[in-house]
Image (cartoon, rainbow, N blue to C red; front, side):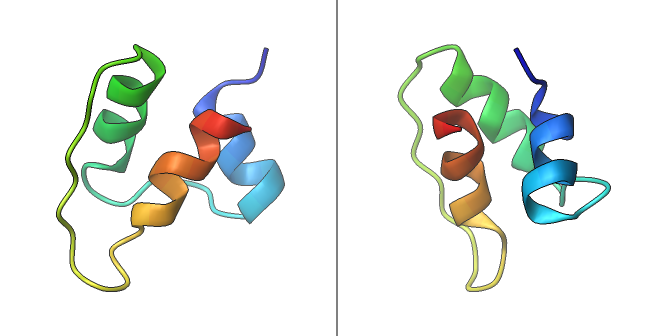
Length: 53
């Protein structure tokens, strides 16, 4: 199984997460409900794409 950091690097080409992204991803991976409010361009989609991968 790949870690979120490995998926981020291999699929998206980024070396690190933006602020709070890692916390959101960990919460989703624990199968907890999550309500995320971030500005446009804040990286919301990665927060849900990575757990799906």
